[in-house]
Length: 133
Image (tube, rainbow, N blue to C red):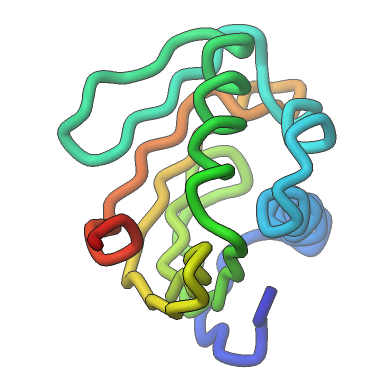
């Protein structure tokens, strides 16, 4: 993960550290660690696709999705909001299985419950170049 390009961060120090751990698990494609950040009733939506509902369904979907590329690295540019409802603006650097590197400008809206677990993720970014032949 790259944090040197982070211009605005509105999270508290504790929430920021927790979010970095969450993103590190994502970048490592460590589904078990990542699942620990999720509430049982979590939902995730990619753009206009239907939401995937429930922790087990989200973990299964992400596990499959993460296998469709070799690596991902988040390059953080801005985090706006509060400790429980925020948006990350980032450059997501993907490496495809064929070695081609693709950068996607993306935004991820995240909501957390009172226990600090993620309840909702809404992702926006054009990942088509990650998957085109």
